[in-house]
Each structure stands twice: as structure tokens, then as C-alpha cells.
Length: 96
Image 1 (cartoon, rainbow, N blue to C red):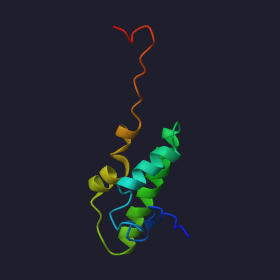
Image 2 (image 1 turned 30 degrees about the horizontal axis):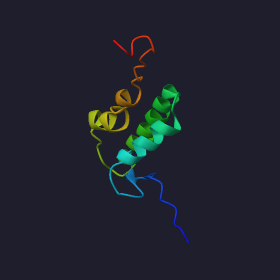
Image 3 (image 1 turned 180 degrees about the vertical axis):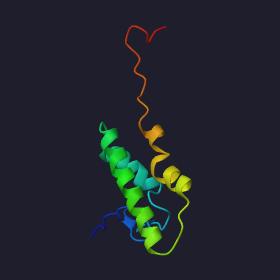
Image 4 (image 1 turned 90 degrees about the vertical axis):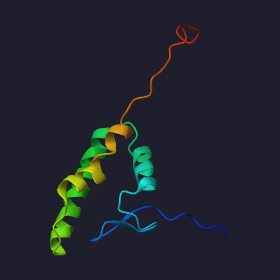
């Protein structure tokens, strides 16, 4: 019997990864999200912004004072790397 890998999903209200216990979105979650939302970067940004908002609300609910710039970096800071288009080389320029 083969076991399926556990997904890297958030555990609320702590917003830690259920699989690796790293702050979510962890590295594997970022890769999975980038693949899942491939071609839909605006939808990914909205999803992560809503998740960040929920995480901030959960932190306040736990009596914590979240570091808002750190939350922004954690949830949205990596998006610019995921959204960079790959440069395509035209067949005419491949031999230059």
C-alpha cells in the first residue's frame, strides 16, 4: 500500500503548515500554489491576500499583535518571483 504525501495546508489559528510546521505558506506550499494558480497570478494574489487577512484576524483573536510588514512579506512577498514570465527565445535568435 502506498501512502499519499500530505499536503502543505495551513493549520488555523496558528497559520503553521500541517505537514512541516513551518509558517504557512511554507516553501512547498508556495510551489504548490504557484503550480495550482499557473496563469492566474491575480487570483493567487487575491487568495493569499485573503489568507493574510484571516491570519492577521486570527492573531488578534489569540491576543497577539502581528508584525504587519512581516505578514505581508510572508504571504505576498514571494509572489513577484512566482509571476516572472520565462523569456522565450525565438528560433531565429537561438543561433545568435
